[in-house]
Image 1 (cartoon, helix red, strand yellow):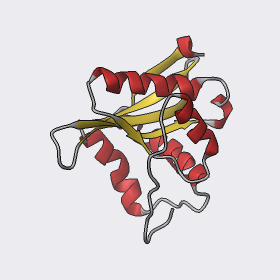
Image 2: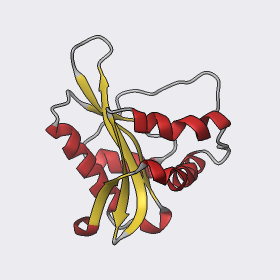
Image 3: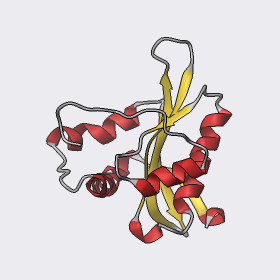
Length: 152
Protein backbone atom coordinates (compact mmCIF):
# COMPACT_ATOMS: atom_id res chain seq x y z
CA UNK A 1 0.00 0.00 0.00
CA UNK A 2 2.86 2.40 0.78
CA UNK A 3 3.81 2.98 -2.87
CA UNK A 4 0.28 4.29 -3.57
CA UNK A 5 0.14 6.39 -0.43
CA UNK A 6 0.33 10.17 -0.72
CA UNK A 7 0.34 12.89 1.89
CA UNK A 8 -1.17 16.09 0.54
CA UNK A 9 -1.81 19.36 2.42
CA UNK A 10 -5.35 20.02 3.60
CA UNK A 11 -6.34 23.25 1.84
CA UNK A 12 -8.36 26.02 3.50
CA UNK A 13 -11.32 25.33 1.22
CA UNK A 14 -11.41 21.74 2.48
CA UNK A 15 -12.37 22.81 6.00
CA UNK A 16 -15.80 21.12 5.99
CA UNK A 17 -14.42 17.80 4.75
CA UNK A 18 -11.60 17.91 7.29
CA UNK A 19 -13.89 18.77 10.22
CA UNK A 20 -16.25 15.95 9.26
CA UNK A 21 -13.38 13.45 9.29
CA UNK A 22 -11.86 14.92 12.46
CA UNK A 23 -15.22 14.65 14.22
CA UNK A 24 -15.38 10.94 13.31
CA UNK A 25 -11.86 10.52 14.66
CA UNK A 26 -12.62 12.18 17.99
CA UNK A 27 -15.89 10.28 18.31
CA UNK A 28 -14.01 7.00 17.91
CA UNK A 29 -11.67 8.08 20.71
CA UNK A 30 -14.58 9.24 22.88
CA UNK A 31 -18.12 8.23 21.84
CA UNK A 32 -19.47 11.13 23.90
CA UNK A 33 -17.52 13.72 21.91
CA UNK A 34 -19.75 16.56 20.75
CA UNK A 35 -17.94 19.42 19.03
CA UNK A 36 -18.59 22.68 20.79
CA UNK A 37 -18.94 25.92 18.86
CA UNK A 38 -15.38 27.01 19.65
CA UNK A 39 -14.10 23.70 18.20
CA UNK A 40 -16.09 24.20 14.99
CA UNK A 41 -14.95 27.80 14.69
CA UNK A 42 -11.29 27.61 15.77
CA UNK A 43 -9.82 24.08 15.54
CA UNK A 44 -9.13 24.09 11.81
CA UNK A 45 -8.23 27.78 11.65
CA UNK A 46 -5.73 27.46 14.50
CA UNK A 47 -4.00 24.58 12.77
CA UNK A 48 -3.91 26.39 9.42
CA UNK A 49 -2.52 29.56 11.03
CA UNK A 50 0.32 27.75 12.79
CA UNK A 51 3.37 27.58 10.54
CA UNK A 52 4.93 24.96 12.84
CA UNK A 53 2.19 22.44 12.00
CA UNK A 54 1.52 20.36 8.92
CA UNK A 55 -1.98 19.01 8.32
CA UNK A 56 -2.01 16.41 5.55
CA UNK A 57 -4.62 14.21 3.95
CA UNK A 58 -3.64 10.58 3.74
CA UNK A 59 -4.52 9.56 0.20
CA UNK A 60 -4.50 5.83 -0.57
CA UNK A 61 -5.26 4.56 -4.07
CA UNK A 62 -6.57 8.02 -5.01
CA UNK A 63 -9.02 8.35 -2.08
CA UNK A 64 -8.86 10.20 1.22
CA UNK A 65 -8.06 7.54 3.78
CA UNK A 66 -7.47 9.80 6.79
CA UNK A 67 -5.28 12.63 7.96
CA UNK A 68 -2.13 13.29 9.93
CA UNK A 69 -1.19 16.38 11.91
CA UNK A 70 2.44 16.83 12.92
CA UNK A 71 4.89 19.62 13.57
CA UNK A 72 7.25 21.22 16.03
CA UNK A 73 7.18 22.67 19.52
CA UNK A 74 9.88 24.59 21.32
CA UNK A 75 11.23 23.04 24.50
CA UNK A 76 9.82 24.85 27.53
CA UNK A 77 13.22 25.63 29.01
CA UNK A 78 15.97 24.78 26.54
CA UNK A 79 16.89 25.90 23.03
CA UNK A 80 15.64 22.66 21.48
CA UNK A 81 12.86 21.71 19.12
CA UNK A 82 10.64 18.68 19.68
CA UNK A 83 8.87 16.89 16.86
CA UNK A 84 5.21 16.30 17.60
CA UNK A 85 2.69 13.95 16.07
CA UNK A 86 -0.62 15.37 17.21
CA UNK A 87 -3.12 13.22 15.33
CA UNK A 88 -3.07 10.24 13.01
CA UNK A 89 -6.43 9.04 11.79
CA UNK A 90 -7.05 6.27 9.30
CA UNK A 91 -10.65 5.62 8.26
CA UNK A 92 -11.89 2.15 9.27
CA UNK A 93 -12.08 0.85 5.71
CA UNK A 94 -8.33 1.52 5.24
CA UNK A 95 -7.12 -0.05 8.47
CA UNK A 96 -5.09 -3.27 8.63
CA UNK A 97 -3.64 -2.47 5.19
CA UNK A 98 -0.42 -0.71 6.23
CA UNK A 99 -1.76 2.82 5.67
CA UNK A 100 -1.28 4.00 9.26
CA UNK A 101 2.19 2.55 9.58
CA UNK A 102 3.34 3.99 6.24
CA UNK A 103 1.98 7.41 7.14
CA UNK A 104 3.53 7.29 10.60
CA UNK A 105 6.91 6.39 9.12
CA UNK A 106 6.70 9.33 6.71
CA UNK A 107 5.84 11.78 9.49
CA UNK A 108 8.74 10.47 11.59
CA UNK A 109 11.14 10.75 8.64
CA UNK A 110 10.01 14.31 7.96
CA UNK A 111 10.54 15.34 11.58
CA UNK A 112 13.90 13.56 11.93
CA UNK A 113 15.16 15.25 8.75
CA UNK A 114 14.57 18.58 10.51
CA UNK A 115 16.86 17.58 13.38
CA UNK A 116 14.42 17.53 16.27
CA UNK A 117 15.75 16.51 19.69
CA UNK A 118 12.99 13.88 20.04
CA UNK A 119 9.54 13.04 18.70
CA UNK A 120 6.55 12.87 21.02
CA UNK A 121 2.93 11.84 20.73
CA UNK A 122 0.05 10.84 22.95
CA UNK A 123 -2.12 7.74 22.78
CA UNK A 124 -5.52 7.78 24.43
CA UNK A 125 -5.85 5.37 27.33
CA UNK A 126 -7.32 2.11 26.02
CA UNK A 127 -6.28 2.62 22.38
CA UNK A 128 -4.17 -0.53 22.30
CA UNK A 129 -3.95 -0.73 18.51
CA UNK A 130 -2.44 2.76 18.28
CA UNK A 131 -0.06 1.99 21.14
CA UNK A 132 1.07 -1.18 19.36
CA UNK A 133 1.72 0.75 16.12
CA UNK A 134 3.88 3.37 17.82
CA UNK A 135 5.78 0.73 19.82
CA UNK A 136 6.45 -1.15 16.59
CA UNK A 137 8.04 2.06 15.25
CA UNK A 138 10.33 2.35 18.27
CA UNK A 139 8.36 4.70 20.53
CA UNK A 140 8.29 3.94 24.25
CA UNK A 141 5.79 4.93 26.91
CA UNK A 142 7.52 7.38 29.25
CA UNK A 143 4.67 8.96 31.21
CA UNK A 144 0.98 9.04 31.93
CA UNK A 145 -1.00 12.26 31.59
CA UNK A 146 -3.62 13.09 34.20
CA UNK A 147 -6.33 15.66 33.54
CA UNK A 148 -8.67 17.42 35.94
CA UNK A 149 -11.94 18.67 34.51
CA UNK A 150 -13.29 18.55 31.01
CA UNK A 151 -14.23 15.54 28.97
CA UNK A 152 -11.72 12.89 27.98
